[in-house]
Length: 333
Image (cartoon, rainbow, N blue to C red):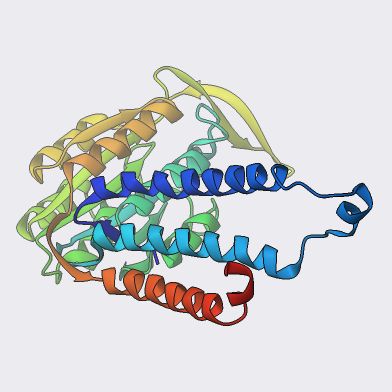
């Protein structure tokens, strides 16, 4: 009865304290009256035992006080409240373009660049509840893993399955960006963005990165570029003649100049992630920069429900009256 209930006069509820005080008064009075009964012999006193009717009398008194409590609640005017929202969302279309080349296995991020990038991207996806998101992967070639969708569980599952070796090795930044742009060019969303993540320089593909950036600009697509990798040396993967992978410290080489030009050309921003924490901060910043606008109208309706409490009190008092005039009449008289 109290779910989603508010009171028009909540101060009246203070009088509910009367109910337990009445209980204390009743039982103290009963004990006092019982102690004043003078019996002629001790043997007769032993025969006097509490009856079920006496216990019922106590119960009826408690019932009357409960009815008093219900009347107090009714006077406080309980009201049920219900509310609903009319939400209008202006979604953003986002394509994540992920580099999965061999160098993404470098261990300057924990446990490596690729796994760190996947984990942070999933967190980013979970925050974009009103947006359509797509996924493009690239190395020496580029493929669309998922077109734009609001089913984020699909994107997160695909992200979890990403691994090096799914496509020919290399770093085709231009092709990766062009593929992402192709997924967005027909979009009618208010804002269209690509989050392009890489750890290298463009060394594959037949589309120059700045050409792809110009195509993005013409379609009104903003590109946020993220360069992943520490400054200086990093433990990079090297494939041995027997097919196994060994790690050797090598100089980190990222074409940040081109990435900065891509971002500037498309009115985006460029970022550099040198560890897990900075990568998380970059995605958090992009999340803040590209907020979905939501118009919320809240409606509230209140209904009077005091009569439920008053009716319950009336039923209790009626039952108490009937029992007083029938079953317990001989005792009360």
